Length: 109
Length: 116
Image (cartoon, rainbow over all chains, first blue to last red):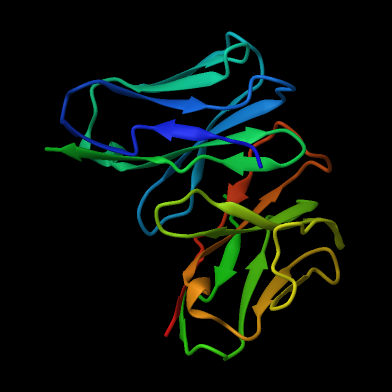
């Protein structure tokens, strides 16, 4: 069983604050890493697919970086808004997809 | 925009009863996944189909769970008999690629199962 860990488990930030969280995964035989956003009562939505060491991807105020040699990825949210409140999941892809436990973000207006 | 459909959205059943969930993936997606997400944990893969064939069901509790995708399109996941520990969110996802690929999966809204 692969160990994919996310931290922190949850956090509360004020509207306008920037925040980041971490996904750690095995550094050997890397294939791909996905980030998903999962809002309550909605389907998980793909944010990023990352495949290359050093990848940096951006979508609006959200960005992600990837370090496959040390086995981690960071997700950054700049100027958090209440609509960013969701659980953010990373998924490590090798022969199969293994999800982390998620980081639950609550943005306080 | 095409979406993955799942039904029902919510299901309450008594233990020892049978329950079934349905998933219709995005048209043309060859790969279909069923996940179980227990509160506080990440989604866990139960079964993966490539067209109508099972390619991974190593985490499927086969004594009580079964899954099929007879025509390689929609899929049904069944639990019989349901146990209290089966209470969870059951997510279906699909992907257009035919291999364990880097491409993202598209998820349905899930079925929230409560076993009483």
